[in-house]
Image (cartoon, rainbow, N blue to C red):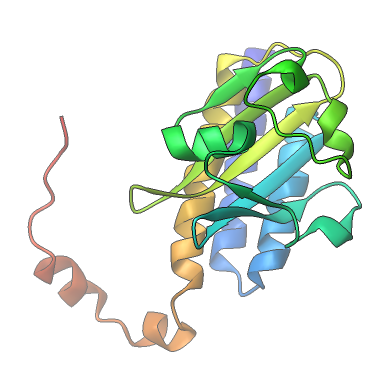
Length: 190
């Protein structure tokens, strides 16, 4: 069973990697990733927030409330999502997430009443650029594997955002060897 889950995890990362190399709109890529996460995590909700001028903006969701995309905004001092971005830390709550003192109630999001909450920062070039939230309607004890998967997906999405900012011509015309050699030695951390 554990080997099967590891293989599913590998397939998830492979599918996300395929999104990263295709020419698709960022919205399509984020929606695709949200769908993959919902399928893999068997959760009821997946929301992706991206940072915009100091606010987290809802940019992708698996639930059909398109009126909230781009409209739901959180400051970094608001809600569980803001806490994750501010603290650069994973957050896992297995039950009654809506009772957490950091919780922010929106009223128009069905997720406001969901029990379990798992959230990871989206990281690009060692900076928080967003947050991914998954939620379960019922109480759910998040596994270490689920936490690691969401952390890794957050890192993948961050890399994808950096790539999305590049013009296709920049990729085609880049002197990749020159770029590597001129960047200096890579120093291992630790």
